[in-house]
Amino acid sequence: MKYPKEVLTKNNEVRVLEEKGSYVKYTYIDPETGKPIKVGKYSLILKSESSTRHLFVIPIKGNKSMIVKDEIDKEKRKVWDENKAIDV
Image (cartoon, rainbow, N blue to C red; front, side):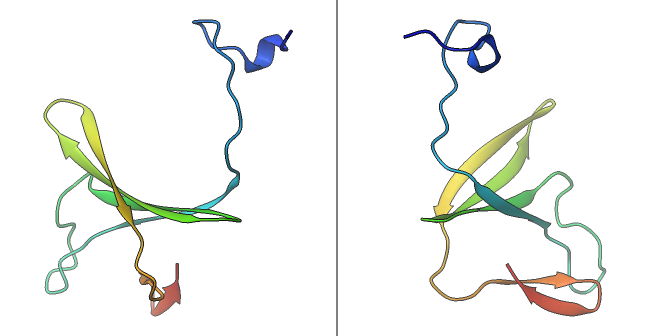
């Protein structure tokens, strides 16, 4: 099958859509000081029509990060947005 150039990688592999959706990114701060717990640590909530995934992004040595996949709680998760808690 012939694919358009725009969907081919440098290694001549085809990029194929698996899901499409939206995301929420949040970090963690110390409740006492209001300062980041660990610079570069954050979570991504990836939402599609059929599923929700929670990814932890944790900085490691050098200029790299490690991604840890976790299932999101069935309960509604909330994040702090300036002066109020909002649903993720």
